[in-house]
Length: 302
Image (cartoon, rainbow, N blue to C red; front, top):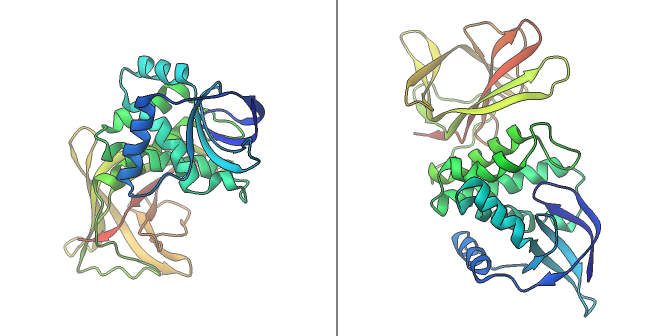
């Protein structure tokens, strides 16, 4: 019996729990090895089957009094996920998620933002799942079946986790060797810029909380139109249709460039195009109750 005081679990908070450890299955070992080869890193943890509720990344003091990194998974839970989703990728995505926690150093402590840690692990999972051949639907299937729309103190709501997985999946799919760093609104209007995904974010005007986040398109282009003298975002939506969002102006502020659309939203959005190549523009004001934003991610020079 081993005690885990704190752990990064897939869908529930785990603390002050005593667990048993068993030999992992050959399949689980194979998947872990495959994931680590995909990211070209050595395993910095020990894989064990266990009686945990789902799957966790944690630190355990072993019988030799040495603190070791572990990934623990419940075999019955893993098999139930496969059955629930109808695919093996769902189970593999859970193991990838826990690997993401260890590779990001989440089990070492030093951060109280568990939601951010979960999203980082989800994004890593999405990236790995694309590399392993999963569709986006397959990569998100475990979250869709297991997670709550509301979220908890330890885990974000389903919408944010799905978005994080899609971000990782699309980043793997559209990875470019020539990312540009944009800051202070220094975008050349003679060039065309390409992103990885377009995300629509609906946010409450009263609380600032996200109501819904959804990937609405892929491979968006940001281009200045000499004819209309406006910036345009063009993209292919989830149904394969071509869409354009026209922005009324681009202006510089101390926080970076700010985009506003032709609807004339009331409030500016800071961090328009930031140093990580991410563009935000406010699109609509729903009667002062909620705002819609576009997140144009992975900005590169085309």
